[in-house]
Length: 143
Length: 181
Image (cartoon, rainbow over all chains, first blue to last red; front, side, top):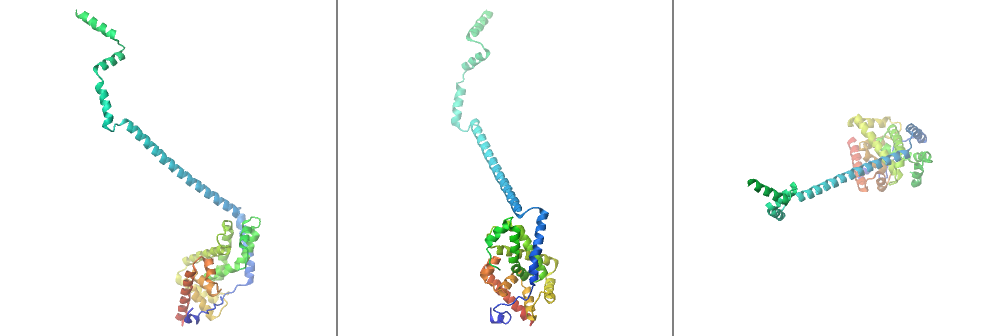
């Protein structure tokens, strides 16, 4: 502290100029303790119970957070799985390159009239004999 | 403050079987120290009495959650400080700052708990112009001659900041006296 300050404030400190009787402190404990059981009796719960309740609430909050987190992950995973499935199906049905086109064209090109007639005969349950018979009878009619 | 085994004290207070008795002992041990800590901030017996009782009631409600991360005395001190600051805030909301200064200065003359001469009265008027926390630090250093390290443990402020705060407080008080000359 500077010399100027020493004229006002004692460097060794000072006496706090307030006093309180010992009686006040003697009665203080009793007055405080009188208020405490009243509060507890009214509430009917102890400090330990309050603490347990608080920790129980905290647990519930943590559970809820974990559940939300888990739900979010499930949504993300299911969306990703759906996208993969759609992509797989799309790749199967949509031709994407010319190399895949070629064999298809070849198949179309080799599908001749003969094949068509055979398929038609199979479908209509007509065999070669029926065809010959039909042709022969047609000839006879003309005759 | 009396030397006590705080760890054992806390264990007994947190045990439902011994809680009430141990808490009563705690009030006995810490009430004087806390009274003056609060009085430094409020500078009025009746207000200090109210805040001190609230402090112990809050301590009772919260003692089961006290983990022992700090000393019990520090924990109690912080409750007391918060209660005193809340009280001051509420009082400030009810009166303008000028009115508050007038009330505090007038109270020293009429205060039956004031036990000082004219110079001491003037000193307390000068102290009352300091912000509450600075007033408290000044009082702990000047009237109790506490070491900065002790005050730091109690209020959770660094020693450097406390030294600066005390220095500013001394300057303000000096200026107050000069303005009255």
